[in-house]
Each structure stands twice: as structure tokens, then as C-alpha cells.
Length: 148
Image (cartoon, rainbow, N blue to C red):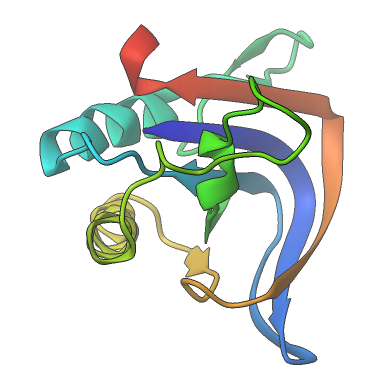
């Protein structure tokens, strides 16, 4: 499982010219699921995400978590995080989780995050989405379950 976490001042997701999710200060998280991922993998990633201390404290140090700043989450499913670009110029996505597994885990991640964060918004699985954001920093972290 891979999470691309962007610290944002605000972000939104649009499907068919309708905004279906938007947040203020918090994290925009792109979520990639592989075929080997499980709920246990998701739980590990969620713990790391929620505990991530990348907001500045009163001394300008990145020392505060999402909870510390009453931050919000916008969660977007993105199978392209598992693009394999080793051969040729057209990426392969065979390492990405099959749609049923990926959707189940994406929905699980949303529901588990809602238990811990007061504002959790999401995209629409499998839809053509337009994402708008103001990256704060910029600050972008890549979490890979194989590395944590």
C-alpha cells in the first residue's frame, strides 16, 4: 500500500463538474492499493498517517499532528501509484490491486479514519476526478507499507 500525503491549506475533488469533497487545513492523501494488501496493512498505514507530525508548532518546528491542529483529511484512491515504468514508455499497472480489493480497502480506510478525525472527505472510486489543492510548504510525504 502506498500513501502520498500532501500537507494542504485546502483541497477539493470534483466529479462531473460537481465538488464531492473538500477540506481546509489538513492532508490530501492519494491511496494506492496492491494485490497483496490487507486490512492489517491499512491499519498500519492509518496509524502512521494519523500520527504524522508535519505541522509547525509555535517555534516553527514540524512537531504537530493532524489532531493537534484539528486538521482534516481528503482521501483519494489512485491505482496509478503502482505504475511500473521499467519497460517502454507505457506504464503497466499489474502490481495494482484488483478493483474489488482496492475498493474494499479504500472504503475501509475511509471508515477507520472517520473514527479518529472529525472531517474526512473522499473521492469517488474509479471515477475521473479533478483534484484542486494548495500544498502548504510544499510538504509531500510518500509512505510505502513495504518500508514501514
